[in-house]
Image 1 (cartoon, rainbow, N blue to C red):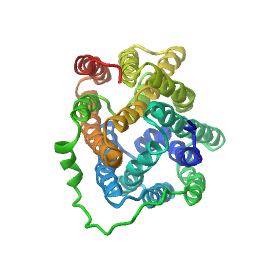
Image 2: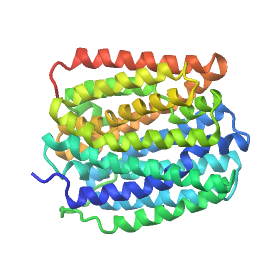
Image 3: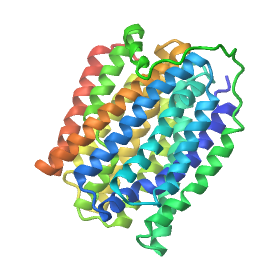
Length: 388
């Protein structure tokens, strides 16, 4: 069966351009925010609120997409919001404005995610889900490598010109929007329906398959101990890395993530999605424990190599697993529910992590996360006996 269809390829390229735009800014955000007066605690809160907004909207719009039976309109609108948020960053530097623009970007992600993942899931059979989600994740993450690379080159010639970078990030975003018009949606009967209430997607928990609920409990526990990657970048700065070194290592991580996403997806199809996910969590625990002691560039490169492996073995794999254990008509709702709750947990995790850093030490922040990942592994091994 052909599992890399025209739709899968097109959605993957759209994600590529969107992530080039987003990730041009992501590794410089800690430096920019600290330069305009944001503390570590405030940065953690900003990321948490932005991700919570994305999460709640993922749940609502994923559910709405399932009810309406349409995907494309959510994909187009979501990518459009994310694109226009980039130049808005350059307009003002007031904290409230930054919070609003960052939230707008994440809202766009929330609107499109459930519908896009449901469209990807519908393109193939269950035995190829790992490959399809891994293929899409590879393109998405390649953009996450090319974006920081473009930022790195720009900052070498124009140091600290962050606002100009925000304007340049709009260009690949426009390409992404244009490509969404080429996505062909499978014809579905449009039935007039009453719009659900914003939190209606939460009711899915009561009717969801038992396996879905067991899996989501484990994934959300892990989300509670997994703070924003921005704190990893701040940890590198804390350990003495320069701005260019931080961006360089982040590019390296995303290249590994991109290169390994499809192979890890194929591995998940072969040996089981559960086994692959557990392997990814074990790598996370190793990285978060190891970064406490890493001070050299070589050590950071080794850790971020394994961090790229962790990301490749968890992000697409978890969505593939979810899409295999829920009815096809509920895929956007199920993924929206999970990612929505995941983002709420990220709000808590990022805020707590920032507080642990401030009140105790960076080592405490990363140590708690490493232990939490190990506990998640034990939970998944206990609850799920077969390979899945």
